Amino acid sequence: MSSITWHYVLKFIITGDAAVGKSSLLIRLTDQRFLTNPDPTLGVEFGSKLISIPDDDKIVKLQCWDTAGTESFRSITRSYYRGAAGCLLVYDVTNRKSFANTRSWLADVREHADPHLTCILVGNKVDLCDEAQDSPPKPRQVTTEEAAEFAQQEGLLFVEASAKSGVNVEAAFVEATKDILNKIKNGVFDDSRSPGPPPTVPAAHDGDNAPFLFISLRITILPDLQNNGNPSGSVLVTPPSFHSSWLRWL
Image (cartoon, rainbow, N blue to C red; front, side, top):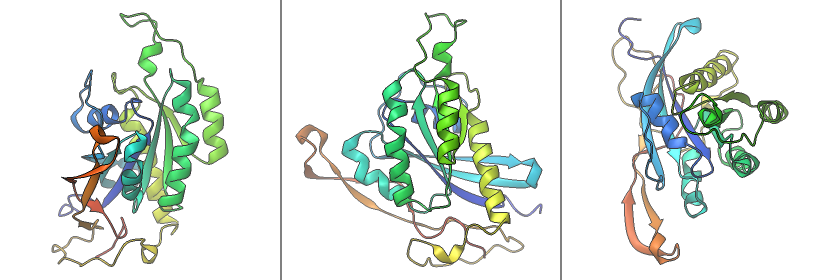
């Protein structure tokens, strides 16, 4: 076991409306810091994090893809759902519309991702409702009870969090990861059902029986946002998009 850096590599997607704090959640997870005014995500952003699951005696590497929440990028970000094991479906507890739109995002995920993907509903920005903060608190527009009921109806995990304070950010990923590992134990995930093309298998490290996630480079044509969303020939080379199965034993 000492020769294994990690036991699993799991792909996560982070989805939801624009400005609900998806990028801030990712940065809080990976860098343990908070950006007050992050730039809007264009296409997708990537972050990686090693977490420990003591109950299973496992080290898991999370490969997290933060997807843009604007409609102009939706067709692009959908392609990143493929091969995901976990999903953070994020809304802002002070924004009713962002919660209502989680139904649409969830439908997208279920259409384009693995049917057994673990999804956790995350109510972000609970710090804004805290009366102890320096600035006047914002009114909460989505109650904990309502969100929990929605999550139960849809078969989702649920947590409220704050990217600013860090409350429940890592816990959201840990809970989702535990659920995924449980599915692996119970044989829910089947590697032969990979939605992507067969990968080229690299040589395994001596004594390393860890699963690997295979990647391929994708070049995406992005719409020119200054040209009413019409393609103008500009090309963005995105980070590798995960194809094939997110779980493969060597």
